[in-house]
Structures are given as C-alpha cells and as structure tokens.
Length: 219
Image 1: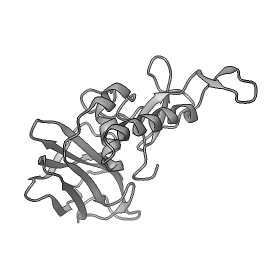
Image 2: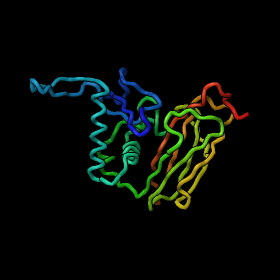
Image 3: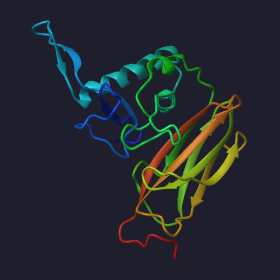
C-alpha cells in the first residue's frame, strides 16, 4: 500500500480476516467483506458477494462521513481518527498484522471530536530502505498539541517499544538520528504518538527496511 493510503482487510461475520484477503505490514483497517448484499443494476436483484473490493467501500464511506462533519481535516488525520476509533482485536498494541487497527466503527469515528492537532512521520517514507544511523523527520502542529513520543520497535508488529525522543508543542518540527542497534532485523517500525490536553492520542506509524548487503548492526 502507498504511504498515505488506507490498506483495507476484509473480515467475516465473526470479525476474523477472510482467507482470501491480503494482509501484512500494509494493513490499516478492516471492514466486512464476506457475503455482502450487492445490487445488480441490470436485473435490479440482490446477490451475495465476497471480496476485499466489498470491504473497501465501507472504509471510503466512513472517511467521507468523517469529512462531512469535519471538512477541515487533512487526509492523514482522517486516517488516524478511523484507526483510533476502530474496534481493535489487539487492545494492548492497538495494531495487528491481520486486521490493522481493527474493524472500522462508523459511529465512533463520526462522533469523535477532533482536537486542533496533527502529526506525521514525513521521512523516511513507507517501506523505504535505510542505512544504520538513519534520520527521521517528524512534523507536528496545532494549538491543542501537548506532547509526543517517537518510538522504535523491532519487526513489523513489535511487542516492545523504545523511545527515541519526546517533545512538546514548543519543538514540533524535528529531524532526529535513529541508531540502528545490534540485533535489529531487516524490518523495524517507527511509531509517532501525540496527545492533546485531554489525553486524546493519535498515532502515525511506518515500516522501514535495512539497505541490502549492509550489516544489521552499527559497526
């Protein structure tokens, strides 16, 4: 999936990933995609169909409805709100490789009251190749932004996170160097989490890979 898009996973009526649905590091959100009633425009009759192409319109419609009540939101924030308000199967991490942040929850997304804050990892890009001691650029803003963490985790679905930097609204546009520590595999995850005064948190994350033919540790 491209960096600023939403990777959609199809689920069944048990909220389990459908066997035909692609999944992985690109998984952002899940939506129903099994036995979905579809109208045949030629015959005017309904039939049941399955596929990720049946799940994707649920997410597109949810994004449109969020924008209908908050038309000033940038696309990145819409994606983050949908992710935050999704029904996650992994309450501890908030993201898993099967369904991303979880099944979209339309009511929670549309009724969510967004703060005047935004944040994004702008460099490196999604699934870029990086070298040891690579630079990360983060950009944040908004009057309600209070503080943020930039964290790093090993692999695509980290169970543990290490804080790279923390900051507040006074230093919200930074470029930092991330040491590639011994033991890191070919893939790592960067996670930017940021909060407002009320404790509401949004998140941006990317996955990067080590440049081929380089040792996987700092020399």
